[in-house]
Length: 282
Length: 282
DNA sequence: CTCTCGCATTCCGTATCTTGGAATGCGGTC
DNA sequence: GACCGCATTCCAAGATACGGAATGCGAGAG
Image 1 (cartoon, rainbow over the protein chains, first blue to last red):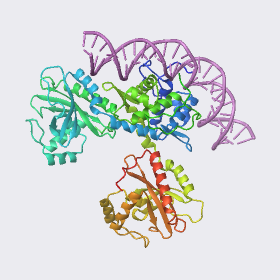
Image 2: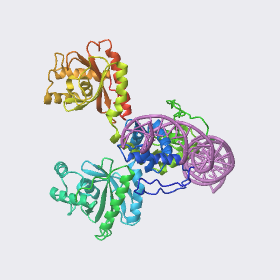
Image 3: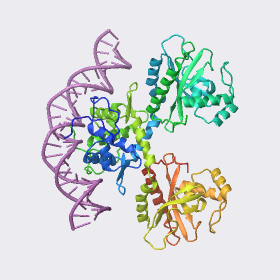
Image 4: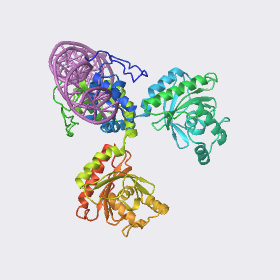
């Protein structure tokens, strides 16, 4: 009884990510199993029968039943007797919501930003939108000389910064027009986009591509590549970018950097419990 | 080691609800304890140190640590090393959100409606707002002869039904005026409130009182007493009422019925993970 | 620089708690 | 009426979680 294997729970037939660290300092079998049950239930808002959940997490029904009952006592799951279906309970919801209140974007993003800095070798920035501007929240500087722009608290205009354009690319063209009407599209350099239609065209391209490029549109000699971090409603929450001198961020490097930044933005989105928007038709 | 007591978890010093059923059919000690830990963490969005959580749920730190580590492996809690604080994790959030998708107001409310019917002896109704009307979703009929109004799918105007007025009492006076402008306040009986200012006055009183009364404003001979069920944003989600003939819902019974309906509306609010609005200054 | 203190973390032998097969209900269907 | 499929309960075996004690670690005082 109580087989020794810390078996990775296989859902149905589609193989799952193998849980790493089987010998993490402490490991409570019954608890892990209970959490697997919750995960399984969370994938089925319409509910699952005892035998269904049990099968999905590869547990004998009796064990699954005992764990579910315990979860039910604490209202982490509930049981609809008429359909005899197990579902996620109120308490799981109550507890889960405090995650949103406690999450600290900057703290959660920092390790990813550090990794991005190391993999790209460039300075990494995190910023959120505020009216017609972006506000930089955090920065991980690269070791090289000639580092780039704004530290925390710094600001730049939405229409001529990498992060700004990435965030804007998820607004409607009408909202962009309204923004231009209210705040204008002031020229910062020769390359700044000051025509709202040109801007909208570029934003459409950015959305398809998944990352934006600021090619000296904000300051001469400065380039940056940016992508968006989303919240749980698939709304833009913040933007992530790498920035550096034009001489170093060459055309040749841009596609790779774009992919890198997008990927890490996706990872941060995951980390903060966010949700990617539906893939808009290319 | 492993003391036998299925000890009710005491948070700090304020005593908690004693968990009933010490030997409920299944009961997994370590799982319950882990859930208590999560509950404790959920009360502190800023996070808690190991020893703090352990103290709150009355567990030795080693045990708490082992459970927290296991929860962390599944990302139900997270650990901020710089502050050495334990917090609710992403997965708890992800899983919790499916509660909202899976909750079925009617199914969840029904047992409470049945109890309300038994305790009041009157027909009980559940309805939501839809434009200028309420739509009845469910009904639990009383055993007595001469039962009241609409079955599921039935409609009534917001301004002259118990549930409608209860729901409206949480709108701004301006919104009520807009509603009156767009849809009018048609007279159904001699007692119908057709003056928007009179209506607003009554709504203010209803909000203070916590329940509304429809005294033959919708149909002669019919009275009803109603209260509001709230969602997680403290917004009105639905209304709950008891209704019956004027002869039976006497003035003398109204205060008790009002208290009863309000209380059960609060219980349903809890059940669906809702949140009562801040007590507006009386 | 060292000592101390308050923590978090790891270790380990014990017996408690979990485990899962088998037995029992329970409600439909052929 | 007898058979399913399914949820639920029971129980003895032993793997598993327990918590006290020992160790590590970092910060602040002396």
